[in-house]
Image (cartoon, rainbow, N blue to C red; front, side):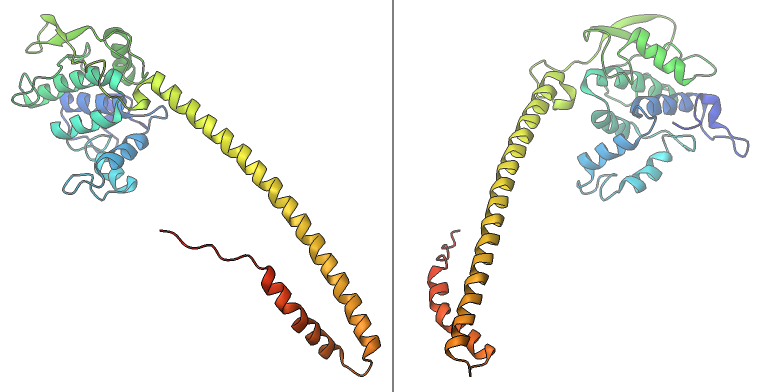
Length: 288
């Protein structure tokens, strides 16, 4: 998140931000919600490319992490010129925010986006969660205020563990002081979830991966031992073969003193060739 610690930090010594106060609150909230533990959007960019990078016509299609960095900086960051479109916010929340806190993040984002466009809902027909943050009317909002609001009234926006059980959350009607409870959208318990959103499933995956890795390591060790044994046997065979060839050359030189060493070695090779060829293993047939 760099130097962007509050809505006031959008303005720099060289340039004032074109964003309105409500737009700054929305952008800062999105930045806090999408940032990883290092305050970076790197993981969000990676997930966006993984989910939409190959979808033709999508705004992430064909993008690299670097090119997506520049694209997101125009709407989420200190140099933002306008907030992201609502459809884009929904897509980013869907891939960047763990399932346990998606409803809370989307509800806050919906209330903040609706405020920027002067309506009671972000878009016509929206029926999802809607919950105004406690700092909605504050003249200056800080990162600490956003995180504290998540801890007090809804699942933490960067903690990854909900503080409630998916029950009602605060909602705003017309953004006035009269609040009523509205249920947060919760997916069925039996819905398929990605292992990263399910601690039990993630543990099973990690245990299975560790078991497979251990089995592969044991197999590799056995293969290495077999390879070493074959290398030793091969070295011994080559040494014995060289010794026998030397004895044979010496015997032939004694019997044929006028023959050159090249002639003797050629004769030995011609005599040994049939035996060597016959000992070669038959090639295995190729099967489709």
